[in-house]
Length: 394
Image 1 (spheres, rainbow, N blue to C red):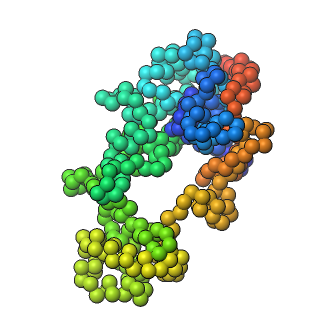
Image 2 (image 1 turned 30 degrees about the vertical axis):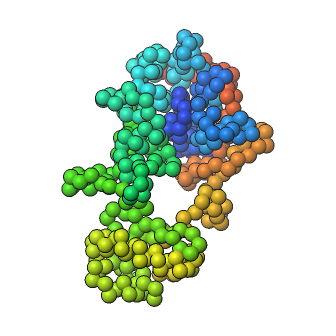
Image 3 (image 1 turned 90 degrees about the vertical axis):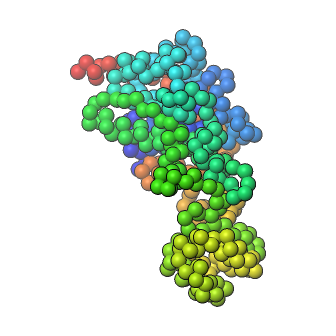
């Protein structure tokens, strides 16, 4: 499939940084015509995070803005606000991730825009949602990881709380928004009605924390950090070997027995305190210390070979460079190359499209330079508005 299941859907992307651009990139990957609005002369703040690529944009922008067209519009001016209202008449979906109330102050909030396009799907992504005591707090991924409890559960047992290395609440917030928008598009195809969607990154973080919150709900005990281990199972964590760290997860009694069939671990069979999953978990510290002492006697490849032969879940702890050049990743095409600026010949690898079975396997559009499609999009605006008005009068 090259056009994608969202072909014919037009999205006005008034987002910046990460959660919003990720949401709209997913929609663009699936075939929607995404029009990204950026501040004239400066653009999305994500363009300026980290050292710039040769084309002048940072990795955050390059990683999350393919399959979009780009227009420069200044929402702080009456002229820019009027352009957004005109564009709204031609689109199916508006996505924004400003602090709640900002779009309304600009005169382009949901209540205003739905008068222009009554069946509009309007998705607002924010840190805490549009209502509640925290709604006006500034929010980025770091804040949501902290306030949600993710940081409190991440890190070594006796160490300080750590954030996840990846911006998980930004990304899961963006995923949540994309799923909600697609659901609303399907709903509209039956009802003919649009809707306002309020996506909170904090709510999305709770989804990630489902196991921990459910455990607290059952026994009332606040979950604690367990490092790379699992709070309910052992052994399930990372271990040092003679050469590099590996992880293994012995999650069932059958897998425990398979592991104990290896000569190095056979003596564990005779230990009553390791006979069941619950007893192993209760004696986690001693068990895992003994396991690591054994694993450190041989290189990682030795242990991984034996674990794989016994069909035990195990893997090396890879660096980004190691996994990005792995034959499996290369064979699957998990990474793709984009060109930036378009037509420059300058190329960079970025994550590919996990949803490529229902979309193009390659970017239809490379990340756009600032204002690249301003004239093109605004030139289409009046023509599309006229066509839409004609259809509505039938």
